[in-house]
Image (cartoon, rainbow, N blue to C red):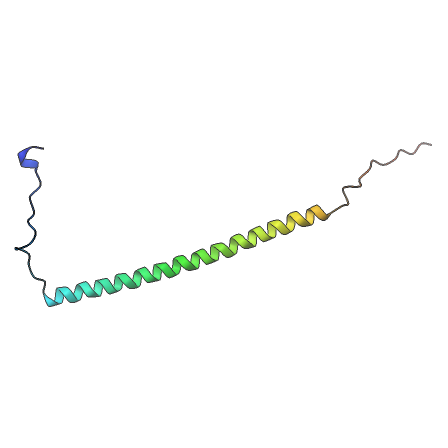
Length: 87
């Protein structure tokens, strides 16, 4: 990098400005709103997972029931060709 494209150096520590009381209150308000948002999203995610689990269980149950019911049908097992009638 050339000298004119270098990033400015940041000094941490002594020259930091103190935050006003209003700024601190605003930060606490934003933090509280963010915490509420996160808990709401976690609740929605949990409910979505429960719904997905119920749907998958239902679909697998219906599939298993239909497979078992088709296996129990015997009317096609004894299918013989009709005998020819000769006159």
